[in-house]
Amino acid sequence: MTQQTGRGAATRSAPAGDRRNDHDVIEVNDLVVRYGAATALDRVSLRVAPGEAVALVGPNGAGKSTLVNTLTGLLAPAAGSIAVRAPIAQVPEGRQMFADLSVDDNLRLGAWRLRDRHKRDTSWVYELLPELVRVRRQRAGSLSGGQQQMVAVGRALMSRPQVLVVDELSLGLAPLIVAGLAGHLTELNREQGIAVLLIEQNARLALELCTRGYVMEAGRIALEGTSAELAANPAVARAYLGGHADTPAPRGHRPRRRRHAVNDFLVYLVTGLGAGCGFALVGSGIVVIHRVTRVVNFAQGAFAVIAGLTVSSLLGAGLPHIASEALAVVVAAVAGLLVGLLATGRRDTSPQSALIVTLGAGVLMYAVEIMIWGDQTRSSEGVPGAVHLFGARIQSHYLLIIGVTAVVFAAVALFFSRTDLGKALTACSANPYAARVVGIDTRRMGLVAFTCGGALGGLAGVLVTPMQSISFDSDVVLIVNGFAAAVLGGLARIGLSLAGGLLLGVAQALVAGYGNAAYQLEVALVLMLALMIAQGARVRSVVQETA
Image (cartoon, rainbow, N blue to C red; front, side):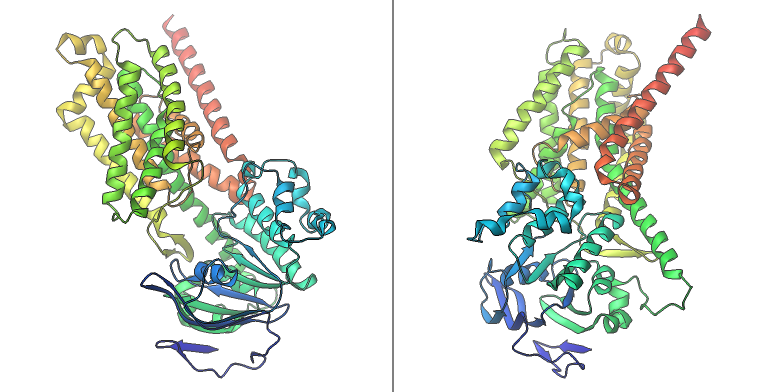
């Protein structure tokens, strides 16, 4: 194994079978890439031989994607040399679908550079990836994440490459889905002879799939060697493999498989809790508004989207974290106030009419979002890195989501139980007529509730956007899951909306991990329907006992 230290210095004595030659399909020597005055890659050197599978692992911000974009010609190097001696294709990070085109059209566009139209035949790709046959006429944007990643691989293959550069194969996908994609990638490498450069944060996956690898940190190659050497390296194990170097298990002994099963479950659980916190924040906003006004606010998901899009723009403009997130939540709160004025501005507006107004407000916000941000997905930076929990690698941002949500729900409980304004809101919920009798302005309290609902929805958007890209129509998933969480609390109890959101998040994560991610929304609808039926039966029982 070769370790590089200092500014580009390296011991160039490579292990046996690792000598450089002019037949390498990719050869990078002392590559430097800069963004303005900032150096993204600092004298990086690597190689890929014909038919070889090579891993490039490292944390967020290490420079991996910059290297990919430079290899494929999207970025120009400031110094050093790149030799690509075979046709190359890229599977980009985040899949990058042509969302409104069919799967078949996406595949055909992958062969855009081929002059021979006969080579644009997609049948051979469907033979390699048979799971795509049944969805070939569907819009690519309607597919699950795993299916979209498969389309991205197929689209790259359509250019008939001899080298496939795959940027973050596992990003945002459940382990079972990743396992299927990994199998296809291995088949392409071993049976089709396509060389693979796999760029991954999931070091365990990358080293299992590839025979050789590089570790990149802070824009430099820190380590290189065979996958076995890297997996056995204590520094790599501590940083990327859960703290323990991998050693071969005796025949018939399968502790790693059991450990991986436990690790997978922990990952599903924590990611589900993180997603559920977002649903709970949206649901709690629905509950706060409904308690005071009796209005079901179907624009609640739009508050989250506005905040998510706002924070992505503010961070992109150079505003620091915390300030960007705080301003985005304020924007969502103002949007909540405006929707409240539209829905409850007239004192004689019925809850049913106000509900329709909130639907219209949601559509209006679609138009505003498209005018300002367009119809492309956006994301924002979250908390980088990961922590190891009982051997499972958990992204730090999920823990932030869970912690912030716990603090917010505790603060909301104190607000309603300890402050005069909170008690006035509770009074409007319990008995609007008595509240008016004692002088509480119920209309004004309704506007306060809409403002609080906007802030809670905005907080959900700010927290979720780093983990899941959003666009103007992302509110559909949020409102469905948020409403389902609110239904668990009977649209009246904020604490139960938290429980409902967490239940939904974990259930959907388990479905995605052990089943099919395409059915996640159906899980929310089924649970919501079951809860409504159960609550309806309970009400009928109470009525019959009273009679």
